[in-house]
Amino acid sequence: MPDLPTRVAGRHFLQIPGPTPVPDRIQRAMHSAVIDHRGPEFQALARRVLSGIKAIFKTSGPVIIFPASGTAAWEAALVNTLSPGDRVLMYETGHFAALWHKMALKLGLAPTYITSDWRSGADPEAIETALRADSEHKIKAVCVVHNETSTGALSRIDEIRKAIDAARHPALFFVDTISSLGSAEYQHEAWGVDVTVAGSQKGLMLPPGLSFNAVSPKAIAASKSARLPRSYLGWDEMLAANEKGFFPYTPATTLLYGLDAAIAMLQEEGLDNVFARHQRHAEATRRAVTAWGLDILCRDPKYYSPILTGVITPEGHDADVLRKTALESFDISLGMGLGKVAGRVFRIGHLGDTNDLTIIGALAGVEMSLRLAGVPHQAGGVDAAMGWLAECRERRLKLAAE
Ligand SMILES: *Cc1c(COP(=O)(O)O)cnc(C)c1O
Image (cartoon, rainbow, N blue to C red; front, side, top):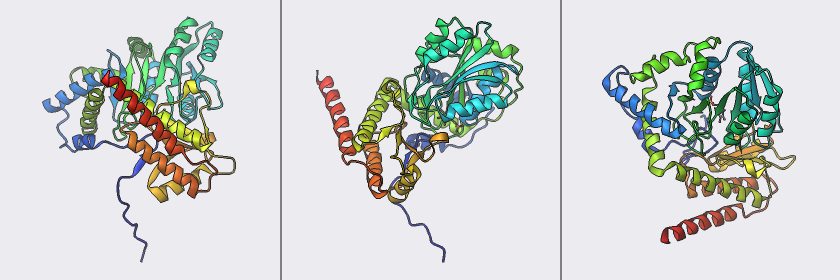
């Protein structure tokens, strides 16, 4: 007789940096009958989400929603605004930046690539230097990943905007916020971003399947003369249909119901509170990692990610063995090392619908797994995290009493 899997009690701990656990309220919102996507009920839903999502990007301009994963929104940013052979400046923060670079090459663009050791955020000075060197303004766009999900480094988009301005360079500015939208402070309009790329399955707490382009007037103007071929991902037909509350093809209706609920939940908690919660859980995680005596992949505290923490395992200890131990012993999924840090790094996601006890439970799972997998470490990581979270709570209670 084949081995039947035994039931595992309780909820799985999906502690990877996306997809993230979908809250019950969003799950229920998606459990709706599919409706006519050309009828008035859909039109009301589309108008509500197309308008509500703007506040999440902090923009007054249009946000385009594709029924596709985040990767399609990367492609849409490039093909709608650029022409074959155009030069683009890209910054290698980690694996996701490397994939965007690879896509640019496949699309026939000519990227100038600033490489790095994957242990920090994008350096505004290096970007300024590269732009100043381009006196003929051949570079048409600067592409940066806001939160590099493969490493746990959050780049300073406001500072990069200043660097582009300081170089007096007219390039478009594209930012990937696939894992940071709804989990870290982000301002599409105030930071002068031309295309913001995002996805549904990380900070927005939805299943995978939706992706976004928030677009500036300058990006829309560029799209009128851009010559890269595009069809499904073309902005023009999408914007024209969205004006009337519709889509040029069948939208992912049930995911849009979920998005409606996600926007409401983020607003009810308050975006600033959501971001502060992510910072608290990130600090709790870093305190645990430090107490264990392990190294955080991001070496510069200025770029520490509020979204996930990449942890380096000691030489000779495979991070994937640790992850396997954690999954088999405690039903917790941890993020694997991607690309050039495969096997050397595991990632603890602390984004989305996470509370103090979820993160403590996750850290307890890691601490016990370190022991079971024989990874050298000191005990006391969870204690350090609990101390920090209790301290934060005390501080907030004191503030509220004043
Ligand atoms: C997840 C992620 C991607 C890839 O998105 P898909 O939805 O898997 O296509 C790209 N960039 C970043 C920063 C991500 O976190």
